[in-house]
Image (cartoon, rainbow, N blue to C red; front, top):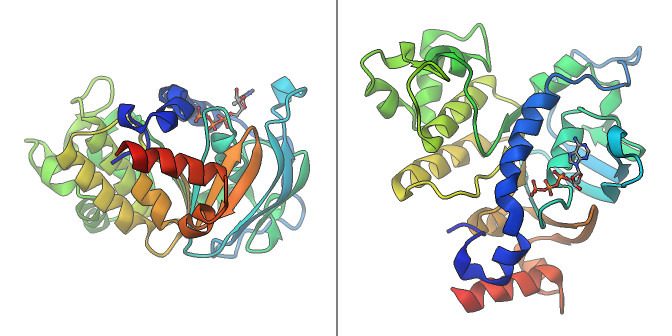
Length: 296
Ligand code: ATP
């Protein structure tokens, strides 16, 4: 079940405007065109394969266009290699902003972001992003074939690798169902894929890229249950062996996360495992969970 829904009462209210988050995805696409102000320093790290340890140390941030509003305040957390970090919180709390900073779309104001204990700004930008994948909640494919859309994650991928990625992403069956198979055109002028199918293409793309750090913006709108199951399964495969930062809406994801960050108005109000957060008397997370359980 999802973390959002009419049956969840207070949670539904808290996450009321989550649908607006579709905009967050579009923002990410817009942002891909943006270059951060800081240029690469002389010691730009290019050669090292990133392990995927991520640390935010007292990070503060405001958007250049709205300097007066501090969007992140003193945000600190650590995601060790292979861990799943779930970020939860109401709309506008700053969840997507954390992922944008990780992708280095913007420069931070205060504090530090460390990747494998090195300052994120010491990495060559291309090298850094080459080690990261993002699976947005509403995947937009570009005009072209399914093959091209998957191979975008690794332009020199072999046919076999593309096939394998599609299989692992639970996309092979539906792709093979089209007469043109991997040559099927998608995007505005091509065939219309369902939300779940598009997500599985994005998952195949990420599998092929094989990043150390995965940023996952979970879908809030429910897919039909069969598609849902296939997407969930594919995501599990994708998250294996990497550090995953998940903007989480699904209770199962949140429960299984190694660390849950409860973000509120740009501040982390609580962090810990599901169990740890439930142990906080009068905690935000505990209250959310109580609502969830009393309503289900
Ligand atoms: P949602 O769940 O609705 O996606 P969120 O928790 O991801 O919300 P953010 O998208 O990180 O929240 O936004 C945090 C704050 O920063 C909001 O007040 C938002 O209006 C503002 N904001 C987001 N993107 C920009 C931008 N590009 N320029 C200026 N302000 C922005």
